[in-house]
Image 1 (spheres, one colour):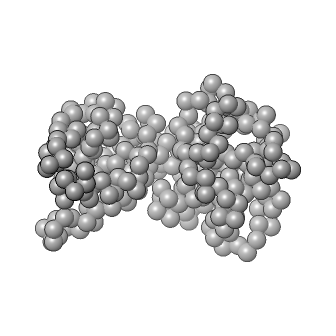
Image 2 (tube, rainbow, N blue to C red):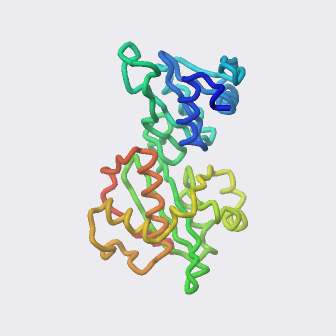
Amino acid sequence: MKDKQTPLMRQYTQIKEKYPETILLFRLGDFFETFEDDAVITSKVCGITLTKRNNGAAGDMPLAGFPHHQLDAYLPKLVKAGYRVAVCEQLEDPKMAKGIVKRDVVEVVTPGVALYDKLLDSKRNNYVASVYFSEHKNSQNMIGMAFCDISTGEFFVSELHKSKINEVLESISPAEIIISKSQRQLFNDIISASLSEVPLARLEEWIFEYDFCKEKILNLFNSKNLKGFGVEDMQAAVVAAGVAIHYISETQKGQLSHIKQIRYYNYS
């Protein structure tokens, strides 16, 4: 199908494939456009007319767009509806471009990772929480949990018995929860009805590897070991914290300087 697309739509498809579980806002001149399933969703959520765009031999495709200066009006609507939104900008002046204008995603806004005023409530935190069910034979009933508010830089980590998961999550009221794709059913089986509507970010299993997550923590805080973080002997907590750092880093394009420390959350 790609070889039948117009050059512009091939570019769109290549970028969209990098952000498959987001609504991709694709900058096209003075407009942000959405296509295919994204267009159907955007039309419905934002009350925008759904039209069509010619895509060469690949046929017409659904289209919904809005003027670029209205981004602050429409992006929050999509995020509040539980969607992750990737903002794809033009990286060069179209008048100076040779061929297709260079484009790439400059930010990803999610329910739990947002700095837009219209998405934040000054009276409450906007936490993204990561949850990891321990697979270590000596702690199979334990869960690692981390939660962060990027608007304030607050970052907490904890390790708790799985029977406490609903109590703790309900107390912090996260805007988004990160889990491993391989643990989704385990999460669904234990979560309470009141939390079942919280948007889930389902990440690949390799991101939950202990060594990868430990390295994320050490790199962020420029540390040689985990002493002083309160989680040195808590494998599941280290995983949860590392996953949260990875997710925030991916959405914020590495801008994590406002997160100064991790504090241990005592839920008892």
